[in-house]
Amino acid sequence: MARAALNAIEILKADHREVEALFEKVRQRTCIGKEREALVREICLALRDHATIEEEVAYPAFRAAGVESHILDEAEVEHDSIKQLIGTLQSMGANDPHFDARVTVLGEYVKHHFGEEEREMFPLAQAADAELDALGRDLIEMKRQLGAGCMPRRTRNMLGLGTAI
Image (cartoon, rainbow, N blue to C red; front, side, top):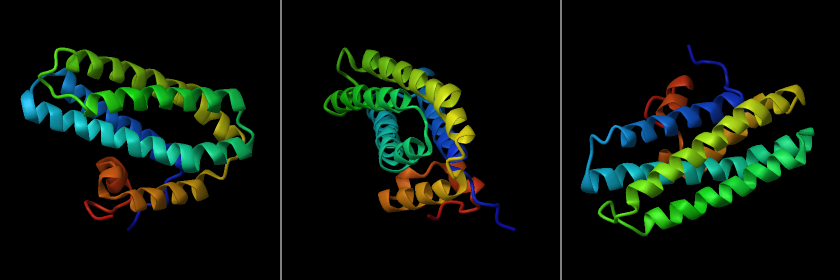
């Protein structure tokens, strides 16, 4: 039996957990060189796609539901900073002397950003009755449009999709 549709908050939190797990792999320093670059590239792609669905689907819906503009504006500015770091990381290799420092800073920015969303924005969206089930369907559709890499394994599993999208 397929699971009921996930609401938007559950989907966004699943993305957060997936990215956090990837950062944990980097922190454990069990991979080096090209393998480390590939893991960081996976993080960067996941963050890029996550930011896209938030900026194009979730945030506008939260704004329309009455979530305070300053919270959404701050989140968008945080996205800009994260995207700048991603761009820098994508232009360097793991052998660059600042690669690990930039990955660490990116992880700290992302942790801060996810924390604020989960502590402040998401509860306000829930309280504002932001039609989270319908928004969840929109997020899943956007993820499908962005491609297989965009939907974390946890989300696919919760939807009963396995590896297919």
